Image 1 (cartoon, rainbow, N blue to C red):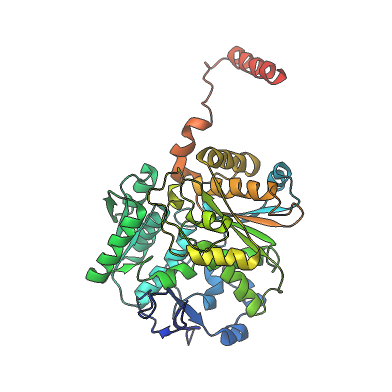
Image 2 (image 1 turned 90 degrees about the vertical axis):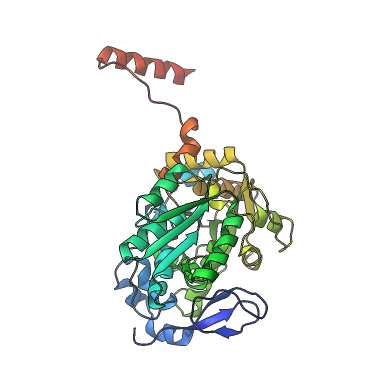
Length: 418
């Protein structure tokens, strides 16, 4: 690209413009900064045909992502499958349901590869040599892997009680993993202090305006994969609330530049009951987010008690006629099992939250049964295997004997008959 299509950073509250540096908060009203684009130029440059001619990655929409030149990190990220899930639709009693399957995102099996590839591509443009993050797991994995591939030094700061599989999936890349005795919100505060003192690129702190925009690519892909249209209903897991707000923004941007027709759509949010500040606010009809000081849920990747984008997520749901739900740990496990048994997709706990909340929204009539639904599944079940280990049975053990196998089958048939 000769000239960048993103022109500046802009305060989401007052609209003040800022240079495209590693800054994330407006100095006048402390509103969050986000990338601002020249949509007229993008509309002239980007057509369906241009997009379809490009490699199948999230970077096929690069004019709508906040980098100045060509991407340098995560060139293979994105364009994950959109799976039409007919067996799941039958169980849920709906006409048409799709699963946006980011459990197979490259390279670390979660949607965080999208946001990290944008943040690190931008970090390199800004001349940063060390990158870092505060994380509940998936982001740590992605920063570690993508920084390793790009030759950047990296640090990841995580709550000390994180799932061991997620800790291992960061350590293997040679990053420096630092466990903090405290909740995620305390980890995040420490990261803001470190970013200020050391000048590192924290993807979800001072690089957040670039990082967050990567989530839009999930929305762009959904529309393209549906045949260039917006789904009537999208159910999205919420931690900070950023993914929901960015998918909403993606739908709006494709309408604005003429890639999809304008149509009515709703975005719905999913949380765990043990950490549900956004869904609690939406259900009580307020945009005042009450922090959850001590999250208590197996869905650790969603356990952010003070969600940075909670207010904006509530507004997005309100503006689109969407709703929020939350579910217990037992419902989360049931959601993971239902998705796996009906679609062959093994999701982490956040995916169980999305499926179980979608079921509640459908049963309550907040999502009509005859309109298309997309479920955003954001990470692979191997990352949180311990959450379901005691709820899926054990292998049956026999000797290498046909007689023993026959006995096993007979017992199973007898049990099924009862």
